[in-house]
Amino acid sequence: MAADDITLLIAAPSPLTREALRRLPGAGRTVLRAATLAEALDLHAARHPHVVVIDAVLPDPAPPGSPNRPDRPDMASHVTAPPPPPYDPVPPPAVHAAHAGDHRPVLDLVRAIRAERGDEDVFLIVLTEPEDHDLRAEALALGANDALRLPLEPLELDARVAVGARQARMARRLRAYSDRLTREMARVAELQMRLLPSSSPYLPGLHVESLYLPSGDASGDYFDYFLLPSRTGAEAAPATPHAPHAPDPGDGPVLRVVIADVSGHGARAAFLMSIVRTLVRAQNDGAAARHADGMPPQPLTETVRRINRHLVDIIGGEPDFVTLFAGDIDFGAGTLEYVNAGHCPALLRGGDGTVTRLPSNAPLLGFFSADFAAEMRPFPPGSQLLLFTDGLHDWTVRGGARLGPERFMEMTEPCLRAGSDVLAAMEAALREAAGGTPPFRDDVTALWIRRDGPIVGELVKTD
Image 1 (tube, one colour):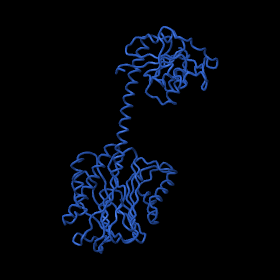
Image 2: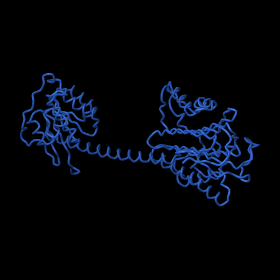
Image 3: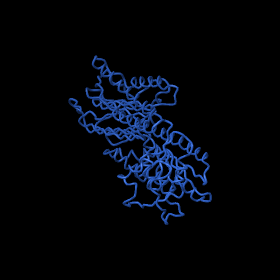
Image 4: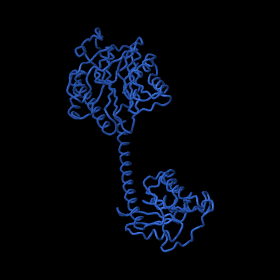
């Protein structure tokens, strides 16, 4: 079919009426004709017309389920090709008395196309008697695009059909574009899932769980965890007021944990999320190379500084930004070194069950160059760390109020103090506060790390 061709379906009981409509001026039209509601439904399903003109007195001679109803799948081929003018080969069936005067078939056709079949692209024109205001109003309420009074001016109807054809073509192009965009975003989401860790390193006494719920197909949230080369004494972070007597580093493994939130939603946020992941992993690859060359790994603060520098080069001057929490858990030293760049406070549970908040201690990333300072906390056996994004507290609870970060903390800290199945307990508390499944409007991500006991011996990684 040429780009300018349209398919016009005329649903009218009178052969002369259908023929008069068929002879309307205008080129590039394939005209289909239906004498009954059943035929119109068949032709709509088989030919997908751009415009449907429906006569108010359209009959429905065969009730649903009737053996001779022409919309059976095995009889559709008999009605797809219109007969030649000027007359139909078979006289139209008589109108049932139950439908005479109430115009139900015309409304049934509009309802079937819009509500039952979900076709929002076809342009529907209903023809009514001049005094039938109720029918016009009801047809338009059910989804008809236009309602014209009889008798018709051929040039006016032709113009209305042309308008309908243009709208139908535009709607189909937009739908095709939307479908293509949806498929592309689904592919983005699929690739994005592959950027997240699929398995964690197996270390005796280490337990890692994650929660990842994108608000759409793609997400601006990111979490990660992986092993770094173990430190030596000369590479230990200095003592801080929070950990003045931090244990000396040993030869145990170092687990880097990262969670980040890119501002905004959709494809742009997903693309920036992949950049953040690449930068984080690139620093890890650099650490492995330095370790192979006998060089100490870069400090965590230098890693965050480099990530920020690259983000400033990429999105500096734009409204985008990234919040990030990055921490190194040194199992040999029993410490957590972290930088919180504008991110939600992490929750740290000590071995005695005490829960401490780790608030932001650095500016968010992507706006300007900055230096970063790390803080140190003890992380002995029995410690746990909960990281999350702000989507977990950005939703509405019973009564219409927003949950908010403080109430979220008050609900979540007891779950962490309990120390078991923290993410499941947190989700249950959120559902209880929301009166059901929380209506998350933002991306939701959480990462829970638990250290049950000393980690000794050689590292064993999952296959």
